[in-house]
Length: 114
Ligand code: AMP
Ligand code: ZN
Image 1 (cartoon, protein in one colour):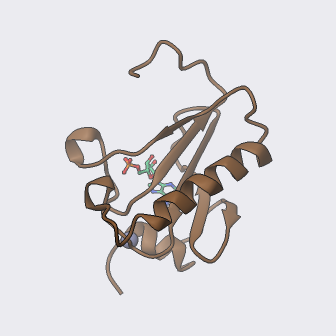
Image 2: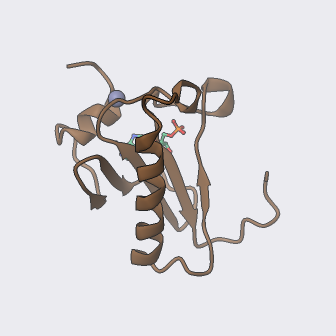
């Protein structure tokens, strides 16, 4: 077993506040929320360290993550809107090198970075 935090969360070795789970994907609440709703969506398998490693061979799980993001948005009542972020590399702010997508909602983000 590698030393990856999110692989350990996916395996249930480290507890998480689970929001959604299926065979390929786990979603859980961020431990240090940056908005009233802050959920992380991860492939259970360590498909890639970050968006920089997405290829034709592993991109299907990215599409599945976005199907799950739409389901979670409906489940969490995010009809007003939400933001999806993926940080790739330390300079971009990535701290956990296991591909993941942040869902942020519940705050007005219209004057922020993008
Ligand atoms: P990033 O900085 O884009 O790599 O995102 C990693 C995210 O994981 C940060 O927002 C952290 O707050 C979050 N995080 C770190 N450890 C845990 C944990 N044990 N459970 C939930 N979220 C975590
Ligand atoms: Zn991992």
